[in-house]
Image (tube, rainbow, N blue to C red):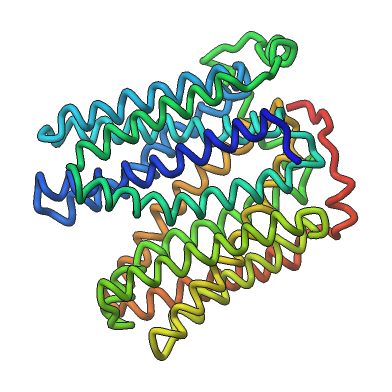
Length: 407
């Protein structure tokens, strides 16, 4: 059984996840209704990696030097204000983009902050189960969020959905506020003097030194990042591929997305039940390879049923891969360094997503969308095979400890 703090943190994460889907769908409608342009909506998808590129350079140093609980409270309350701002000024396009950019900046800081706080708050023996439940909540948000958004939009307006998400973020922050956790001693240790001129350079050097002290974990993180990049790049073509190649209707595409979400839900539930029996390395290896195989089944499906089977398989497998990877990182990287290491790889991820997505987009223009998607999936498959071959033995993973590395 999980303790009260774990339940509060998971509840906060779940509430934020549902709210983010409501916000995302409403925001797309607000921008499209205002401009009537698909390109204007597409710009929203560029803002996220752009914000991550700018933020990841320094946010890790911030996360590792402040109290995590206080940072989470500030970031979540600030997000609620920015979301409310979108609802207040829906007719001012530049204001909407500005608020979205600032929201993505806060999200880029929030990701390593949550990971670091989780590693501090949750005992190592409970991390795998915690991450499995978190994956279940994420998949539940994926299914419930759009459904709730649809109901709100049927009875209200996009602005109403935006305000509801702002309230959800406030409640999420309140849940974090009730977490009982004394971070004062850890804060004093981490809160060393920091010079903006030299501190960032030293932090980046120390992050790179982590590669020398933990080469296996560094390699796994790098290759798994490539796996995420290829997923994102292929997903960017998912709608067009489903429409133009698989010839799916809007109803069929909606069912396809639901099957993927159901797969993640099933995979997460299995993770929770078998959390004590599953090996982390097996979850990452088998999960990532099977995810790539699911994408391949989807892309080569001769008819709708096979495509659904493919995305259901990849959904199940992805839940295993993500849970295993999160657990490995939280167990392997010293808590006082998680922010910097995670931010470093988020920077790489954001840059590669922009480059890879642009390359696949060029493939669709000069060759074909089918060639672009299959090329991306084959690269993903090669990446996952390489990842599996370089995973440490389960016994070595079990022996990994949080040790001081001089970072």
